[in-house]
Each structure stands twice: as structure tokens, then as C-alpha cells.
Amino acid sequence: MLHHVRAPQRTDIHQHLWPEALVSALTWRREPPFIRRSGSQWVLRLHDEPAHRFDPADHDPVVRAQQLTADGVQRALLAISSPLGIESLPRDEAEPLLEAHNAGLLALGEPFAVWGAVSLRPPDPADVDRLLDAGAIGLSLPAGALSGPEGLDRCGPLLERLERRGAPLLVHPGPGPWRVSRGAVEPGTPGWWPALTRYVADMNTAWHAFAAFGRPQHRKLRVVFAMLAGGAPLHGERLAGRGGPAHALADERVFYDTSSYGERTIDAVVRCVGVDQLVYGSDRPVVEPLPACPLGSAAAAAMVAGNVARLLGDVRSAVAA
Image 1 (spheres, one colour):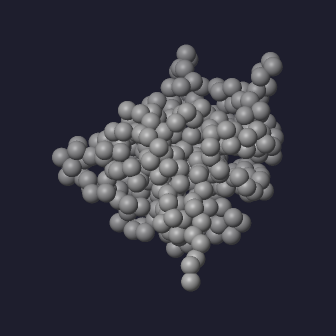
Image 2: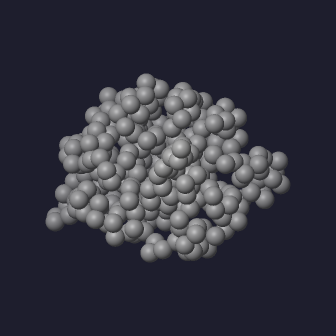
Image 3: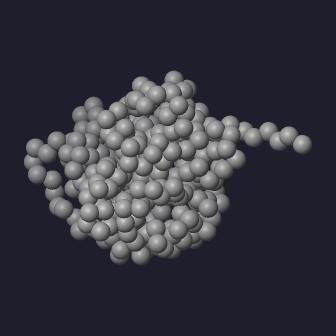
């Protein structure tokens, strides 16, 4: 008997869309993160970062679905904006915001799916079960929460629950509750500064921490690092030279999203880990997606479909690719 095997959906694994309930809740907060009107514009204020302009129109789900079609993508996986620091707030502050985020996005349905977000003060694996049971495809955690053995140990119950349930983890730039605040930003610091300094460093650190401490404890967990893990695979030769776990570059359960990078960096990372480990992530609406995959149509097909199916654990779809 012949069985039809469905082709994997063309998927953008990394977008952000803030539900109205979350935006409303942020306007009522007195301490960062919060949103305030400044003249004719809305401004987002965070700890340790310059003020950011916020446009609610960027988070219209109807417009976003139209953009997916224009991009040639069938589905977007939506994640919390971890630089907000919501996951690291005290639980009584975090939970209303997380509920607004998770419930608002889960209610959207197709063409969207959701990376669930949880409070880290303290981490509770029951939160993972609730989100997965509600329809989340996996969990998103801030890189700052996974920046060493202590953070991985504290988050261990969450990772163990994901691993047991066969669901993946997205590691996204953002602070952890056990990271010391760097204090107020210096006057004149441009808005792009954190994304090119702290975000890159935190993602690089989280990748090395997972390779050294996380993978031995969670051997079957599938993990995707945003923004090519801050370029961590490019340091493989140095890692090997210093006696580190250079075999981590061959880890078939670790994936890398391409958000905010172009031809030169994507090509360099492919040479380190292989094209099978790269997945397409745009980071919309933070940055505009690339018009096309810089490595050609075959690589593009793998990065938006087959590789994503393997990341999400949809083995039958991956075979169909």
C-alpha cells in the first residue's frame, strides 16, 4: 500500500509579533520594559539599552500573513522578543506578560506557530507541559540564561522536559535573571549597538556553554541558535586548539538560523557545520528578510523546508524533502 507523505511547509522559524494584550500591558508598566508615547510616536524602553521606536502597525497579523505570502513562505514561527527581559522579571511580574504573549499568539492559528516563553524565576517544567499541550511547537529561552554551567543547571528541568517531549529549543538573544545588569547605557549610544556587541557575545557564549555543559546532559535535545549563534562555529579551529569540544560542530541536533546575516557569513558557517544544519529565520519585523537565499535554490529549499522539518522533529516531512 502506498502512503502519501506530505511535503514540509516552507517556514520562517524566527519572527516576532506582539499581541495587542502584550502591547497594552507594557504601556501600563512603570519600570522597563515599558512602552510610552513620545509625541506622535511610541517608544520602547528596556534595561541596558537605548530607547527604541515602536510601531504597532508592524505587529498586525493580517499584514504579516500577507508578507509571508510575498516572501514565498507558508508559515512563521513566532517567538517572544527576549531582549525585553520579560522571562527574567520576578514571576509575579512576568506571568501576566507571558500569558498575554503566549495566549495571544496561540490564538492566531495558521499561518503562525509559536515558540512558548516561560518565567525563569524560578524555572518550572510544568510551564513547558502547559505550553506544549496548548499547541506551542517548542520553547524559546534567552541566551543570557544559558551562558554557563550554572545557567544550564538552573534551566536543566526545562531542557529535560523539552527533551522528554521531543520538542525543540530556540536560543534567542536576551538577558538571564542571573546575569549582572550592566547599568544605564552611555549617552549617545546608537540603537544598533547592543545587537552588534552584547547579542553577539551572548549567543556565542550560549553556544559554547551548551556544547561544553548542555549537550552531555541533554543528548537528544534539538536546539536552534538564532543569528548563526553569533558566529560561534567560525571559532571551531580556536576551540580545537584550546582543547574544547570541537566535535560540537558536527552535532546533527544543533541548528542555526540565518537571521540578519548575508552571503559571506552564511557561506562561512556552512563550511563549518554543513548546509543541513541551517534554517531560515528572518527576525521580522526587526530587520527586513533577504530577498533570496544567497547560496542558491537547493540550499534555500533545504533551509526553509527539509532542515526545518528535522529541527521540529517531523521526520516524515524531512524524508519527503
